[in-house]
Length: 286
Image (cartoon, rainbow, N blue to C red):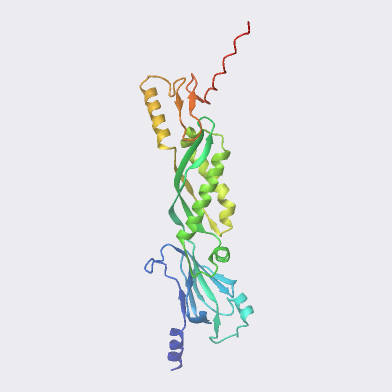
């Protein structure tokens, strides 16, 4: 009979877990709070943390303990900080209050970024041009406790979209910095996407770490000029292929989208427009 009573007591203990299999619309959730009536848990409850998860205990806004993947029995010996704060008694199944946050630590892939508005970049050949860009990146939580402290606040759930929106803005802002400080022609950027992406990740590294996150990979898929500039370049490229002349004939102009049109030198290079002619000298007095 005593063994039966012990079995019934074990069945009545809490199971604290998060099944983020998408069945509850949580596939794109990074942080999820385990909700329990009055946040009351029991010593002896089982905490189940799956692969790709981390569990963080918070008491009165203070992070106390955290657990990696595995099955854990909540007891005074493995909740040392929380035990000291609450003066939990040893033994028994005493209730205690604490919030349990689960953090998804697996890799989130194929996240998209792009410019909502064109970036104004000064090209050494074309002058000021409007440039759009887009690509993809991956995201992972590398410090669950720091993420809870800096991002989650009192929210019971943090979605991937909430964080990726903030990261997209950072990516575009740092891309503008990188392009503005570079001294390469826009026409040569297609061969520098990997180099530019590495530079961009380094610029983002510290700011992303301040959120408890990391961006393991970032890709630049395309940087595009305004349609009218691309059309003008295509026409001139076609003339080069057909053998009709240089890419940009001497004396011709090409609009870069902003600023005055540019003229071409005899070598097919773009140069600033010629200054207006000087006024004629007045006739000599008799």
